[in-house]
Image 1 (cartoon, rainbow, N blue to C red):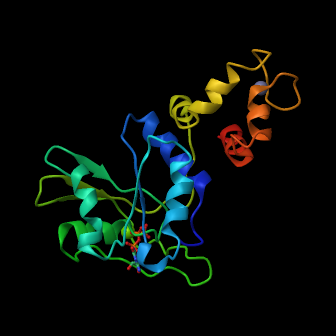
Image 2: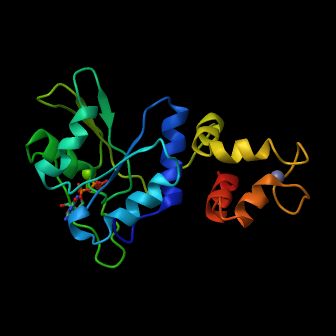
Length: 197
Ligand SMILES: Nc1nc2c(ncn2[C@@H]2O[C@H](COP(=O)(O)OP(=O)(O)OP(=O)(O)O)[C@@H](O)[C@H]2O)c(=O)[nH]1
Ligand SMILES: [Mg+2]
Ligand SMILES: [Zn+2]
């Protein structure tokens, strides 16, 4: 929750998770450095009212406790996200161990320095397996149609109501998607990201 926050990037990760039939949990880190965590939580929740979203201070064990419900025996949890968001930090705190290297972010844009360079897997005392991954510079989606449809389900629902079945949601008459944008029910940003993906 700093100036590295990006809703469209979160949508890309969600599409990847849905494509892989993985249950996504959005963990918003650095709550301790942020004065308006509520606003970040609301923005992410607005993507999908059923989405699980948690704000934490990754450096504090009490704060990451709510994540333990997803880390029980039999669960494998992959931490994904840009460099510097605090994936390794979260794992260290959940394991109560500081063995994974972490690195400070750049002052200018809060981006990370690619501290983690390989994947590693860790057993939590409560039974879950935690998988640390290197932060990706860029997440490209290939063959991700199902995941994109799940991530942007409401756009699919709206499209079904367009006057023309091959509507491109631009200037066609009777476009339910454009109507929703005009009514403030759908973000133009979200449609643009959907089209891009
Ligand atoms: N204040 C604060 N700092 C945090 C938090 N989470 C992570 N950090 C700091 O953010 C920096 C980056 O954390 P890392 O855990 O190395 O990030 P990463 O996601 O593993 O990054 P890569 O390995 O480069 O992909 C470190 O200096 C952490 O101490 C948090 O919730 N609050
Ligand atoms: Mg790391
Ligand atoms: Zn349309």
